[in-house]
Image (cartoon, rainbow, N blue to C red):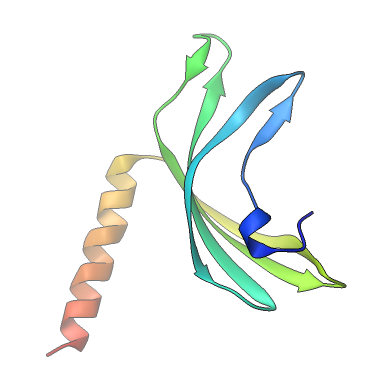
Length: 97
């Protein structure tokens, strides 16, 4: 695990194959609890290529100087991501009235 929030990654390698490839990340909060949203792709062994973009929101807790993952929510498609964006935009705009 990482001791610095900037070092946290979603990359996952197995049998010399990068099975989960991180494309980008945004750190939403830092501190004893960190929240990060990742953009990533999964390796498709059958097609021998990476699939569509996916997204994951993950929460990490720092204990004894190391971050460990405590929860995650995976957004599995662009359609689902757009629905989440639409809902958040609607709710945040309502708060501006």
